[in-house]
Amino acid sequence: MSSSNRATAVSATVTGTTAAGHAPAGATTVAGPRPETGARTDEAAALIGDARRRIDDLDGRIIGLVQERMAVSAVIQKERIASGGRRVNLSREMEVLEHFREQLGRPGTALAMTLLELCRGRI
Ligand SMILES: C=C(O[C@@H]1C=C(C(=O)O)C=C[C@H]1O)C(=O)O
Image: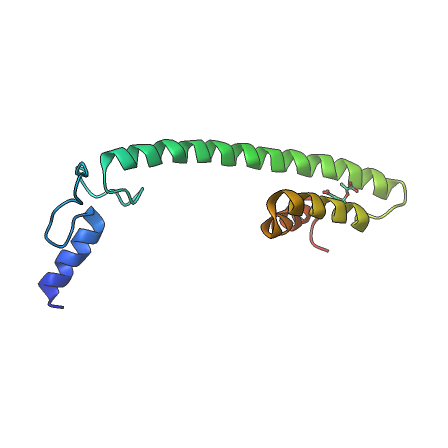
């Protein structure tokens, strides 16, 4: 590929135009490059932007729930340790892992293991 052809190909990737410099058939052209969404049309960029705002909101709520779970878990662990018991209770952790696996499949187990690590530290 010549250097000028390579420059055209790189610019087409960024702007979403075809090698001939046209937008895909039927698409509304985007004013400029939109690398932040990867969309090639204004409509797609708007939908992706809205959906990403919902995801950011959900992520914020998930993080808040994780922090709340950590605080509740800490109450239990402190009480058990103060009573002479151990921080970790493996049979209970198996129940938590099984709950997540039932609902989310194998990645649910990995998610639950990460949650448990956040809540009681590494074992
Ligand atoms: C919170 C507890 O203590 C620890 C933390 C757990 C958790 O965060 O879910 C589960 C079991 C224990 O290792 C508990 O026993 O319920």
